[in-house]
Length: 452
Image 1 (cartoon, rainbow, N blue to C red):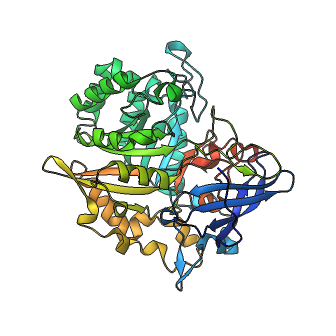
Image 2: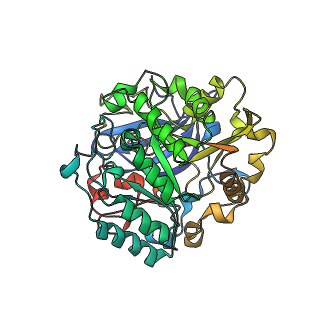
Image 3: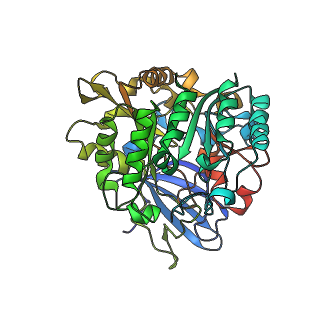
């Protein structure tokens, strides 16, 4: 696949990116092509390795830029000097993730954290008091944590997980908990699932379950094994314990033809409240080039997926049940960091939310924003925007509304510094400071060791 000539395209914004070869920072531009359908490309020039182009939206309808005075522009491209050196400590934190275990009971070929195998006494768990200290430090600095995600490695292996959950549940500054898990322990230990259900009988905890779809294709490549039976047992035990679940599906070209099957599967189980699609990105054990490169460097990776690919596939496969109008960018963070859609469960069937609500009329956060101030960056759009209020109401009606989210994390081929500047998905680092998820897991030498 060859990249198009952008000489007649539309420049959407200027930003900063990375050279996919040496990973060094370099200036970049985002272009909209003049073809039909229009696509969006990220271009940059590395002093050593030349020009690189990556498609970041295979359909420009699903790439969002802020608008001002009726002219397309990127607000983030005009950040005031005061915001050019901001810290994640000053940004709104919509979700705080903390790794509580460094090892895992699986050795997935695609693990973004590159977690070593460990079981029983070999589990490399972060001491409970250290986990609590780091979480409390964020609360002391920022006031509260709306969503705390426990991750790893495999967090269910932590020998004091129940004590940690009890502590977090009792904490008046932690609103909600996510347990990011591969489901192995939930599948093999129904008493573990039952204990979690007993601890949270009125909600407050959701299982964020690794899920690779209902099809056979791609299972072994992603995890080194076909875990569909394991995931089904985990889901059965969660249902028995009244534990709500969000499915988390890594999307590759192999399972892209089955995204609607995954949605349909989730719709059929009332304790599954939604599904998050995460396009495969290069981190941890995933390596390789993915750009069109001048001068004979690594070839363009035609298998790289973006938000538009997943939305279009889901809509096409849904036989009219799902529509493009059902999706909108989240009003917090950069509008290209997370896109969400909803289906309404009604009378045993699923209906398009756009039959009831015009999401485009609630996207005020995409307009009249020529310049962002630190106040803008530190205020959560989910709290301050009309769309945010609506989405919170849909989440409260979780048995009726089924959430479909696309969360495209970045690597060197898709790196857009403006998205980092507005990130609200933060990792609580081992030193206790906050960092952007994409920065922390990027593998860039200048990012992993020191937060912005």
